Length: 289
Length: 238
Image (cartoon, rainbow over all chains, first blue to last red; front, side, top):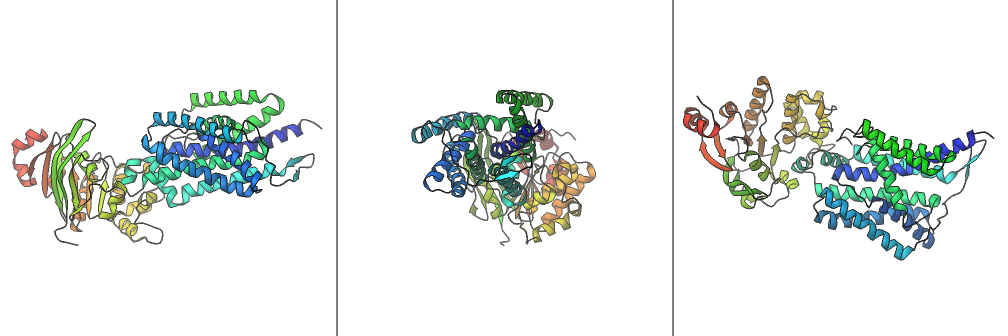
């Protein structure tokens, strides 16, 4: 047994982390791109996805149901937040940051009060070993990467092939003029915010059999999403995916040999480097989606 | 369609914060008519158009089309009453393709290509470039696309904000020609211009705005002859 086993394992784990992180970051990027607001509570939507998954799997016994219900519930919550809080503060960028920080703590405390301060396990919906010859790999993790990829592809199709997607892109490029051409901008905002939250929730559901559900897990996801979105370029799906793979692989491979903290340090350096060289990110053109 | 169909603005007052931008603006555009608003920068021409398009909310006043009050209609529903807009600086969606810019229109859907086909006929060069991103078109093509996009809303009244801005002379006359042919097809056009020669060529009537008010109403012929008005409101000496 040489070095190839831990490296392969690191790469595979890195890809799985990357796909889930890309899914989460895509939600953040979508909301920022279209509404020009930074949703600091994005990580809490991810955490809620994981928590709801635990409840659904524990009491209803179906992981598949969790994968459907959690994004719907979190999307519904986000719709309510958008219609009440964000609308009230007129999507003002600074006020939104403060408001969503408040929301972050509110969600955390509600979960702490109901779910408790425990990290709870959810068992994977299926077990099988993918035999790679010299070692086996968790079939569930492969499943996570595949489902994430499918969801990302679905978002891509939504944005580039549907009328709603056209409305989203038009709103992103010129909100005022979009209205003059019949785009119901308010509805586009609501749908985008709900969709962003639902994507984070779906990522939370997928990750919970690997990482456990915990009321503080959102913070890490938020940071990782920010790193990915900044490196990839805000509003760019391709950039989000590429940046997620870079950060994920870095995380996976470095963590095999050194402490996970080092991989975070490297990611942060990556962000600093990208901002210095390309302030708009690898694929960001400022306005492109 | 009534022959006397018209777009009417009466007693319109708009504010940006505390600044009183539009003061008691009243005007009427009929179908098959080009009404041109002239005036210096900051006179309130663009704000007048934005107010009619529902993009700036007036504090008082009424905007109506064929007697239907549009003052409180949300901006994204105004098109269904027959209003459309060619904004200042074109304001295309630069990262959408030419075709997507037109497909924004709720009237252009897959399967119902009639509206878009009409537009291709008027601007054949756009059809050649339909898969190209709008931001990569030349200035003249972008202006055509801005007009085409507005036409895809099937307007009865078209608001145009400096459609000749930044175009070379040959293209200016092409844009003015297209305004003439739109008028001939029965559209009412409210045209904001900085260029006085453009107004002379296509306008039926001319309003001159100054400091948020309509200072003078005239015809192109009268304006052409009136050196005093030209100098006082438009700073043109002849």
